[in-house]
Image (cartoon, rainbow, N blue to C red; front, side):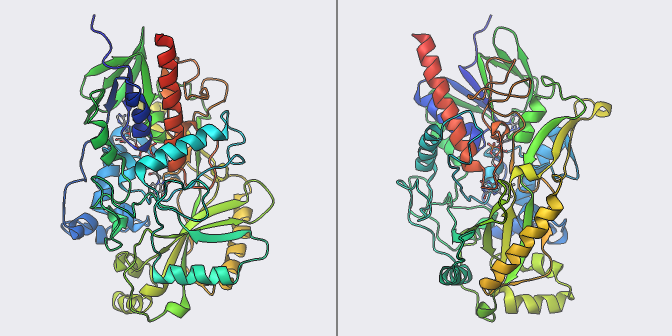
Length: 509
Ligand SMILES: Cc1cc2nc3c(=O)[nH]c(=O)nc-3n(C[C@H](O)[C@H](O)[C@H](O)COP(=O)(O)OP(=O)(O)OC[C@H]3O[C@@H](n4cnc5c(N)ncnc54)[C@H](O)[C@@H]3O)c2cc1C
């Protein structure tokens, strides 16, 4: 009989998968990584083809989602997942990827750190998470921000565009007395100083559509480093479709191959991991609870910046915001304010209640003074479940919705936000909208750490009832705050992999 293919098989090469791989190979473990996608989308294309398509198809398709998700580059990452995962949405847009690097190919690179209060219900201590935040920050490069305590290895902050800088200045001048509304330069996983193989952000490229120089962190680039290790092997176009256990675990793939290892680490993203576990979990009638952050988008006008000629700005150097709008633990939102000057004008013109020509003229006048706020509620304000569709074999459907009482919360928040915009001298334009659940892929909580029963995992992500099967992506975060989630997914994967490397070393003695 053949021996195992590796000590660990990691499924998925997104931010979670690579963060688990580094500590394991550093400890001398043999890691085989399978990814359902390949390097598609990374080819050098002209910016206009990447953003608009060779046939300008991106301008013609306007499905109401963010312009970024409508680009051909984004579709190349999202559509194979839609076709092959068998997951559909009902009041929910199931966003997942099948591409090397996962959704980090198209993420916004905004970073948040959780504190002891945020993880009060987790079965781990804050010190271990903080250590892992530091490991990850050191590896990926975080532009420093004065508001963040963990910044020893941070880099200089990215300069804000002129309109965002104006708003921050105004905020500092009219700071609310109770401190419940905060604006600050966002923390980004974007290099402001070059590193080997990655250039610093040049503040010029239209980075919302992908960074050609590698300044924005993308886990695909980490694979270049990992592949230098003799302990690491990556197989592309290797979509896992089954998991079976006898003496160890065997992964069956879509092309008929199979691979075995004593331990499997699932890092396929929350939806990808749920699809892979569909045969092992008793979904039942209710299904699997999924936390996702309801997302509000608000267009804003900054009158003092009207009629200014557009200043070159880095579209990801946003302002971060946070607002506590009530006394409950869930009455807290965070988000970002983007300048829209570098987005394709057409996306905005399409949404203006004017004809094409008048819309374009209006955009030219106001483009440099336009901002968009994206605001996230905590995940407990969603009410979404992943169900098995018994009529369609293994297929899963995510039914999306909002928590009871969410409408009232939403009204209270909007009222407070209007007050804050006024204090900042901003005018809220018509068109504020709550996105369809799922759209920004802030997912968590399907298989929480510390929970009992078949849907729970240990504090090290080992699935209850399935020894040797570990989960390291957002599935195991017990709750989802309103803060950006990816840095925490990476830190938690790093923490678990360190623990696994230690346990393995001890058992080998
Ligand atoms: C438009 C957009 C903007 C975002 N902006 C931000 C932001 O600013 N800040 C933030 O914190 N987060 C942001 N996110 C969320 C962020 O992208 C995700 O949290 C993060 O990518 C999750 O990492 P992951 O490794 O768990 O999963 P993924 O990135 O989804 O990676 C999963 C990997 O698994 C592979 N895979 C899936 N299924 C299989 C299978 N069956 N077999 C083999 N391989 C498989 C995929 O190919 C992929 O490589 C954004 C997301 C989107 C869509």
